[in-house]
Image (cartoon, rainbow, N blue to C red; front, top):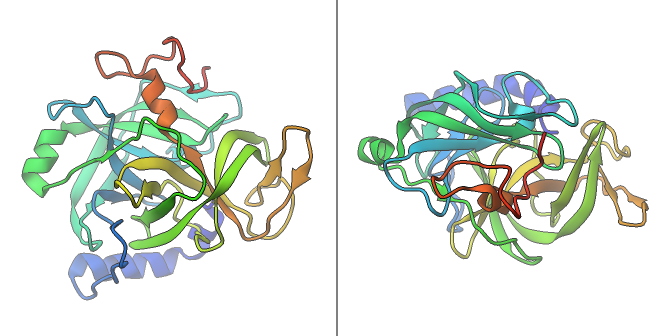
Length: 275
């Protein structure tokens, strides 16, 4: 998980952030369609403003990041967090990485590091209000499983930078220390994400929909240890790919959304891990 390197580079990040906020520098824009619009800079991770396909403008807005970015620390394997209060805040960004304002959560809707690595927050304002105030348009969580070869952008609110590459393939089980993640996304070598990119959305360059969330990479070539995930095949064979980075699929959320646009883990076909 990409927190260790983020802490080591924290001073540089703070300096860069201060420059952006004061307008003394202008972040470089990628040439691709995916920008930093509607991404969120957290204190130690990246996040994004998101909606379900069925969300309406009067719904409370939502923020998505990794489970390992949860303010309570890494979530023990086997634990699922639902509907607990939160005061997490972050800086909402525009397409060039400029700060629009602070967004604040009041509830953790769902968070886990088991099977996947996600934390979905409810904000204390609506989509309509963020649109009116900042012109913000949330990323729509795609209801479809992504496919290999899909061109993607990974915009990091923490670094104000976009990584562009494609999906190289899928990993039956991605193992890192005590955690196992299912059907994980492996990027091609062009997306060598770094510390602080944890929680960044994986965005399809074809339709600008959110198809996953960046969460880890093998930093040192070790096998199945913290910051060094390994790939475990269906037959148990272990493969280590030094330098390669990974993400988790997000269409699982859409399989658990009720008619009232809330997460219901009891729904038939719901893929999100249960407690």
